[in-house]
Length: 175
Image: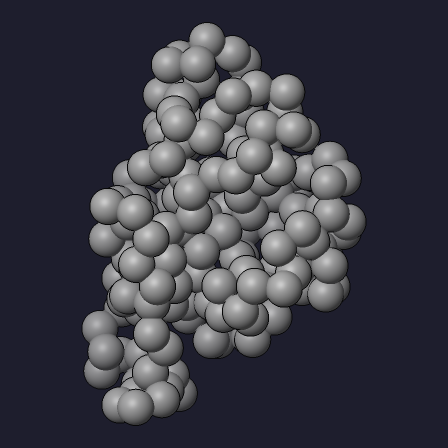
């Protein structure tokens, strides 16, 4: 259960750039990425839903085969590419990427904006394979190869995560 790739871009619709390491900023997202800088196509979405996106490497391969195109994980415009992680199961849960503490906010289905940028019809194939959106509660340096692991409510609370009525509320999107 690891991060295999890290992607970011400073501007909406600009090409994504792969980096070997980066910093996750609490309450902001991936340092240097469009959403952390206040831009991005979906910048008007609630803050907790746009900080970070994750997608499974194997799901990208399945989508590429299904659609019949050469699709790289970076083409999906998600920030972190993982392997061995059941990402949908992290929605509504605390989890760590390296030493950073995150909360799974919602599934991240693709949009027609992604189709415009790639020139490929991806919405249907990625509907349940688009990864998730997460909020960063404790920032840290991360690198390719960082472990991704669930964190208990107690473990998250011990790291300063909000609990009770202040706990984040996920948005359930799709099945």
